[in-house]
Each structure stands twice: as structure tokens, then as C-alpha cells.
Length: 331
Length: 261
Image (cartoon, rainbow over all chains, first blue to last red; front, side, top):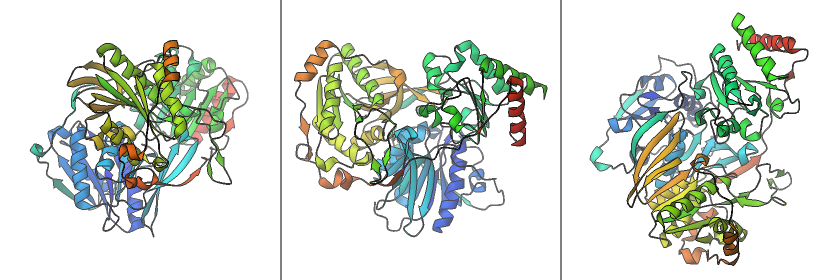
């Protein structure tokens, strides 16, 4: 699709079972700035069923919300999402479409881009615009975060990107903001979903979601065995945070995959990240290096984790962590 | 059961540097390997053939030396490797790559399943699997960690999502991307190595694929790499001195000052 007459910035506002994901608000915050730089409008597209608080998308910066509401979209049937989003884009011709680089976004947004077809960049960690050329500058890590690339989509429209959760901060909601909610039809008989969700099995039972936690206490191989994660769990609980782990820990079976942080796990950006017994392999660091404050506790003073740490304690974690827990409990 | 596995040859390390003069990646002296995420796709293809019979074909788009990756796949047990190589294919983004792969798949019909790795070690996009499915107009499931059941016309799989896993059903043929949890890849067998040495690897270029030059390589790509750079590491932080009690007290003090406690 050529670039004529494509205007407006869109954010795919991901939800699951009626709950909007944090990344939707993060993208609205950045999308608002991009739309203002381009002198255009910001719209959110929300597909789901009985989604809570759709108005919050306007309070967080959207001028317009396209709401597609049918029961089959509650659990994000990807065939249906793909087809309806493609049609909406063809009808309204936005110049930029952003979505979270979540399991869902990374699975179905590439299909939307291929169906249109247009260009797409994956897992961006920064976005900017060249307002004169109306070009979206999409910065993404490659080679496991060793090299950053700035990608553009010069001719085709829309320009599409999936963006890592937590790289942009959400704005304070402004409930006085005005915007419109447009209910978009969904003629169910026109679409078929070839794949079917039989069952969802939760593996994280903690109440704090790791992607949305302000504090994460993560453990590495330095913990030596699964039982020692009780200590990590206790520290996380004292600090009101979530538990994270390196790939090595997940491979050993000490914690389940949903706790894995890094290149093939989650990217997190909490206010405070406490790395316990983690050496700091690049594959782990790329998943947590944008955290506001990083504390490293490791007995090897040369461990690369200290290169990204804000504060470091070189010492025996089996002494440091229990003492830290004790002192925090007394506060 | 006929299975096609898509694989990519990538540099063996992510520790690559940028040549400051040309602003391109220095690739000299770096060994090439099969993208590690693709080795799980190869293994799963071979396991399915061992259970149900049929053929596993590996395809790879890349420069002539990518033939080595296909030979390695044959040494592991893949029946045939086909290299998609043509100077016109160079510089392809995920869309142009998916289009080229889809042309090859058109020549490999009928097949039941196309398996890809979740992402590559170099580009890290994870987009070719879903885009290939879309171009082929086939059902797609990402991040598959287990194939629970597979029959003539449908399958039931587990796929990993942020907070657990989902059990999904899909008709066949379909396209899957798989994660490392799905299996443990085997090592090459002596018989496999012998076979891989003598195997003929057909090379399909634009002519064989009847490719529209505007749909492949850089010409067929929508995206451009404007520039590349090395990320700035956060500067070195503060290491607390003293005994354990001093260190822990210092840490709590700093976190308090920073408003983090």
C-alpha cells in the first residue's frame, strides 16, 4: 500500500478476558507524542468482549477508540483478530500501527502486516518520527541486544511495529480528556477461526505479574538449588515484588518458564531489579537492563552483572540475602 | 506425513562488532551455524517422521554457503535439503523472505506441516513463521512447546504464553513455530554424516521459483535498515564496601534515598 492519504497513529490495545494490558497504555503515551509531532490523531483499536474501562484509553491519550466487541474475541482468536484488523486498516488508512511485542502481538501482527501487505519491525525498544518525511524510526535490538538497528518503512503504509512492554512509561490518566468510542461491527458469519483454544493452563500463581511488577527479585544459578528460591520468594514478598529467573534456572526446573527473564523469556522494566546469584550473561541482561535501578548480589567481583548494576554487593548471597530480609522486615 | 522445516544459517555468536569505517557488521572469522532455535524444528520434524512415516524436507534461503546448514540438517536425519539462493534474494526483510519461502513450498506440495524456529539469533524478529503462514493462507500457531496429538487432518498442541500455556487445535496443513521446551535435539549419526556428504542439495533461484523480481530480496522488501549502532551500556554503579552488615545497610540507605523503599 503506497503512502498517499494515510493519516493517524493507531495503537492495538491488547486485552485478555476483558482486562486491558499495561502495554496498551504505554503505547498510547508514546503514540500521543508521535501523533502530536505529526500533527495527527491517535486512535486505539480494542478487540474483546465486555472490556473493562474502555474510557481509560481516552484518558491515556487516545482521540478515538475503535471497539470491536464479540464473545469470540475475549480470548483473542488470532484468525478473527487478523482479518478484522486488516479490514479496519484498509478502511481507515492509518500511517502508523503499533502493538505490544507480547506473545499475542508477536504471533498475529506479522500476519496483519503480511496480509496488507506492508513492512513491520519486531520488538522495538524505541520509536521516533521524522516529521518532515512522516517516517517512523523504529529502533530494535538484533544479535541478542549486541547491535541496535534503526528500521524504516519508506514507501508502504501503514508503518507497523511491535514494541516491548515496559520500554515506555504510561501517562497519568486525564479523565477530562474527550474522545469518541466507535463501536465497530463484526459480522461473525463472514469469518472463520481455523485454530481453536481448548484450554488455558496458568503456571504463575503469584498475585504480582512479573511484566507489571515494580520490584522484581531474580535468582540465577548462584542459588545452587531449587529449595534456595524460598529465599528469593521471601525477599520478593517482603518487598511486594515478583520473582524472576535466568534461563539456566528455568532449564534446571527450579522455576517455571513464565518467570524467565531475557532474550527468550520476558523483557521487564521494573523500578527496582534485584539480581541474586546472576552472573549477567548478555541474554539475561537484554531482558532487564532498562530497569530503573539494578542491584546485583554476587560473589564474583568480575561478574558482568556489575557492569549494568546501579548498586552492587560483592559477597556471599547466602549471608547477604537473609540479612537483607531481616533488616527489611524490621522496618 | 510430509513435513517441511525452514531453517536459517546464522553467525555462531551474537558478540558481533560494527566496522566503524563502513558501518556494517564484521562477519569475518565468525563461524556459521544452524540458527539454534531452528534445531528444535528440525528435531521435531524428524521425530514426527519416525512416528508416522513420510518425509522431512529442510529449506533455507541464503547465500551459497548456507548449503552447509542443509547438509548438517541431513546429517541429523532430514531426508532432503533445498537451498533457495540467488543474488536477487539478498537483502530480504521478513516479508520478502516469507514470499520466497512460500514459492518454494508451492513446489513442495502436498505437505502436512511447516515447522519454523521461534526466531533467529541474528535478526531476532520471529516474524517469518507467521508471515509465511499468512502468505500460504494456512492456520498458524506460535511458541509450540509440545505436539500432543497429530492425525491426518488435525493436531492438538501446547503453546507457551506469558503466564502459562494454551492447548490449541488446528486443522492440517498448518504452520508452527516451536520453542526449545519442545524437545532435545539429537546429535548427527555416523550414517547421517555419510549421507550428508554425498547428498545433492538442489539450488532453487528466481528461475526455478518463477519469482517476480519485485517480490524478492531488497527490491521486494518494505523495510530498510537506516543505521546500526552498538548500544551504550549503563555506566558502572556503586559497589558497597565493608562487611556484610555495612553493605546491606548501605544498600537499604541508598534505596530509601532513591524512593525505592
